[in-house]
Image (cartoon, rainbow, N blue to C red; front, side, top):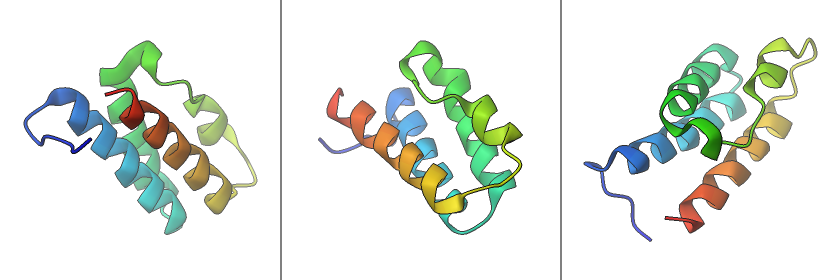
Length: 79
């Protein structure tokens, strides 16, 4: 299903995609900002534990980027 840029839920999903992009590009700060923005709007629908990503000492960029992208795909299929 295509995302509608005027739909608030679609905007949250786009934020998840952006978070995955920035995490993959080694920009943890921007990735987490987009994750927190999407978590604020999605609430319980988001099954990722963002605190785990924030508090991780050894930051595995590709691992967390894939996890966020998996969450994006899961939520997008439920639209």
